Amino acid sequence: MNRLDRVTAILIQLQSRRIVKAQDIADRFNISLRTVYRDIRTLEEAGVPLVGETGVGYSIMDGYRLPPVMFTMEEATAFLTAEKLVEKLTDVSTDESFKSAMYKVRAVLRSAEKDHLEVMDNHIEVLGNPWIAKGKSTSGSLQVILKGISSRQVLTITYFANHSQETTSRNIEPVGVFYLGSNWYLIAFCQLRNDYRNFRTDRITQIVSTPLPFKKDHPPLKEYLKQITKEKKELHKVVMLVDKSIMKYFGEQKYYNGYVSERPLKDRVEMTFLTCSLEGFARWYMMFGERAEIAEPQSLKDMVKTIALAISQKQ
Image (cartoon, rainbow, N blue to C red; front, side, top):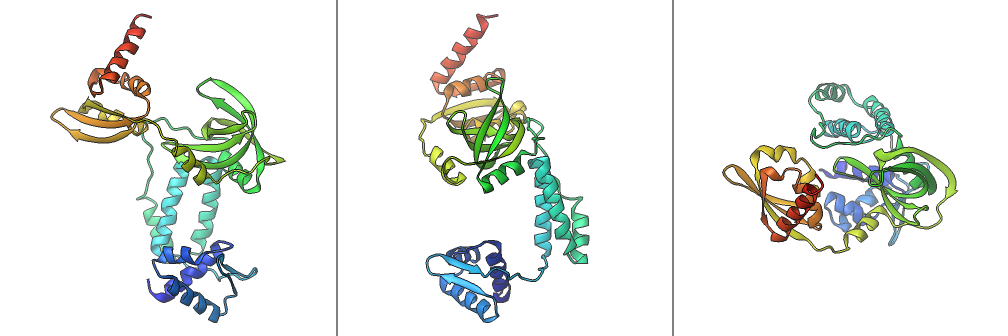
């Protein structure tokens, strides 16, 4: 990237947030702080009204806006790719909002970029895993949740808990959302349980924003997730030999059960896992156990036998 393009990109970055740290600019463009200061001075000399505060960062005075910018071919393609992902991986409300934004993006593209997107639209697709059940929220929950986080307002949700097969109504203080496997999850402080809880958004059957403010301050989502992952759990190494014919049915379930690696053999595959629950792994193994063999540990073999015996005695 030449210096002119970099200075322009820095100006756009400064408009993207209220305050931007010099170190953030340096990290993005892989340049020194000294170069950042020189580029900032160039913007100031060009008439951009910047306000800098030592130890805080840079901001642009209210009212200043960069004239409409043009997107590169690569940026336009990235938008199209994101549109495909949003359509498949979010809820209806978020999908509609992104499509509306894409119309605005396409409106400022040059004819060549518009033609390019028309062609590429038929060559980019996001497919779901047919072996993994994926929930799709119809309540438009993601947008309501994100608004609740921004405005620090309590949300009332009606939630179906799969483990208890019960539907409850509760007030929550949303902390953040994350995507894992094939579903979106919400971390929130539940006033009913007086503790943080994890909710799968496709199991939220109704969600309403209330005028009630949060009762307490909550950590950012990244800090919360980092905190709970620090809780050390004992990991058990599991090695099993699996018929190649059933490998395709594992899908993402193998990752949920601690998949580490695999080694192809003649007719089977040696798979290695690190799991924090041998009992949970044993019950998963029994779904396909007639076509797999546990190599280690012996305790897992004994556990499978115990569970199988208990089942047979009830038949």
